[in-house]
Length: 218
Image 1 (cartoon, rainbow, N blue to C red):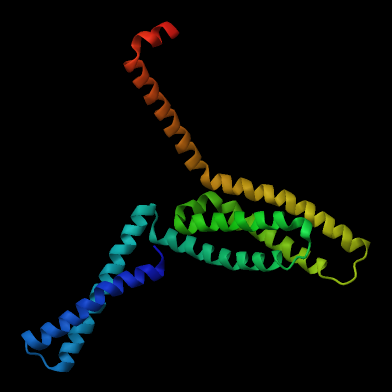
Image 2: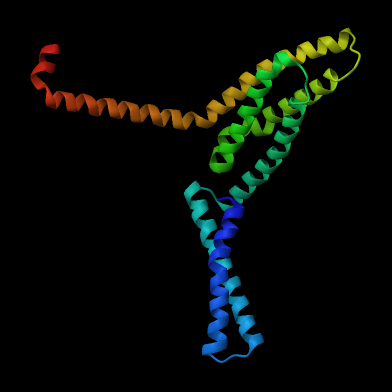
């Protein structure tokens, strides 16, 4: 769950409990103001803490992860966010109009993979080559390309490096596409399975509805 949303939910429950505990302590049990305030704060903190544990457990159970695994994934996704910001900056500092589509595709694919991993953390394991190798490569390539392309005067060596980098970026785009497919491969397999089941169900229904017609067709 989004940490901000989680905090808002816990606060939404904890604040009324805090107020109610303070009022009950002060008016019903006759406590002085300061003890009542202390009980109110303690009650709110306790509710906030318990809800945090319960929500975390439900989250880990839903995504079939341990706390340690989730922390590991979250750390790597946070690092990936920084790299994607660098990628975004370098891609759109390039003034080469002929590569606009390619740059948009690169950014679209990287953001799509990151978005899916943030929403469903377990997908991170399917995208490990992307996070530990391919993302770093594409960031380095685009930053160096951006730097060379921005030079006011270019010699033959720089121009050749730019050509080679463009070709390598083309190849890396295909690698990123493979990474994206790997992340959604389970969904594709599941969808194909459901399609086969649906087709089989439709066929059985037709056989039951038109048995004579289907017999002659065979």
